[in-house]
Amino acid sequence: MAQHMIRNIFSISGRVSSLSARCISTTPIVDGKFQKKFDTSMGAWGPLVDGPDYTFLDGRPTPLRSGQRRRAKQQKEVSEKVLQLMKETNFAIERHQRLLHEEKEKKNQILNEKLKPKGHKLLKN
Image 1 (cartoon, rainbow, N blue to C red):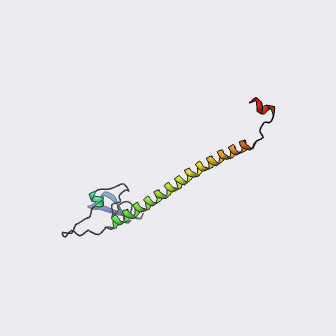
Image 2: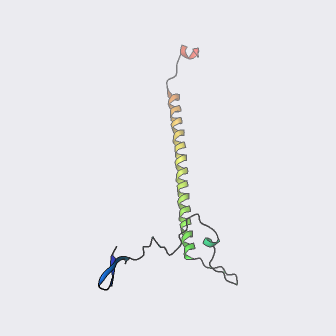
Image 3: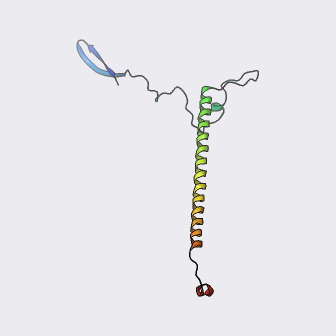
């Protein structure tokens, strides 16, 4: 940040009565500090955010503003992402249940294929 020092020396009858220094900033205004547009959150709604700035007297619909188009695009992207994540979650749940069922069937098949008792051991039960 470049700063310039301006010194004002006031003298009365040849003597210095006071010495003062002022710092003047020559840097431009930072975008983050003063934004020109109002940034709304995803959950903002209402007539000031969603409604038109003006209406036509003959009842024609007003065109969408740039902010409305941007918010609609963001909401569409977020909803598509949510749907994609829900599909992935449902797929993972179904796959896990299917794997558990297959593992249980495999254990049952192994138990059914084991050697069975014969003869007098079979009659005792």
